[in-house]
Image (tube, rainbow, N blue to C red):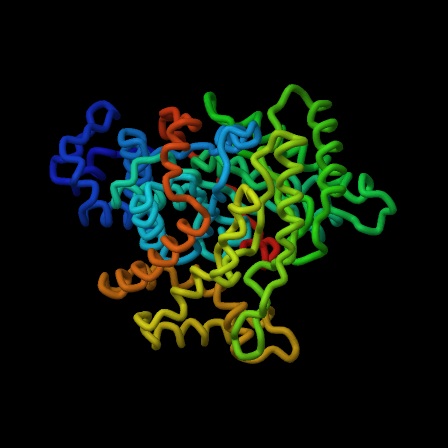
Length: 471
């Protein structure tokens, strides 16, 4: 399929030209105009070559301006060496109104000179939000260009998760499905991958090593796959998990059992770079626990355990530290604790989705139609005794994909109101997590080499995974 970058660039009215595949920008301000909105629309909703040409153009514009997909690996390893500290990287899951939400992220980041920020999507979210990796990367690049954000873009495959039920039925097939997804993500520009084999931890065994064995063996196997498929000049940032979110809290002893087994197993597979961070469980759950009135229950976060786990990850294994999942529904006064105890990264998602669904500017009629769709198509989400508020809160993520184009098509004034409130939330989080000023650290430790836009080679259908994976 032939791509026509010149045709895609035509919306910029001569400010962007393409000669022999090379993109030249004579007027950078044009990238921050409504012309960019037209290009990203084509990248998401266009047909055939128009869609692929728009995506290729966005990639090349990002390469030309510095808004390039990159790996955060070297920043985390520098932290493990003690060369930087005092901040926590937010990993932001963007599920709905992706372009407007990402623009809000980048406006808040520019305002505080922050760049140590991950934008991610989980395996399950890809399915129910209808956002394949190549589309997701194109949207994130477009949002950065629209806001004049020219730092490396840390785009992450969150919860590349092995489904335990499917694994028990056919281990090889399920692991291959995860590898196929990761291959697609890397080909698209996801240079940060969260390998989640924590679902395979078996607490019925008497020793920690036995409990973690399948977890660390499969994590090492998938790490090898990533290293064998990462582009030249890129060391993909890989993370692993020792405790499934929402289950028992992790301990330092479990971290050691996992890491000792993981390091030994990976060494046996060859000379491969290992993980740069490790996800742990310290009391949170994905999306929080919703009460009958629709409010979220208080969370008992074990901040002391998180501090001990992060310290062990850094001092004993040279990683950036521990990762906290399921954090977006925590109370505002909790976020300052994460940089204080040197948490490397926290994952945030559900609250941003909530802001959109519950926003007063969102047409009530649209929300009600989405809820009626859930009544007809998402009853499997409803548990016995759930109130209507509990059901809609838990299930409404299922309506994101079916209503995606309608959401994108809302009047600009409505989308701007929602985006403005999202920006305020991101600005608060960046301040609390000490993201302010991290652009200098990113410039110091992160290289984002130029890469040609490659054809997507992994296009297999994605089976639905754990409905709760994601934050």
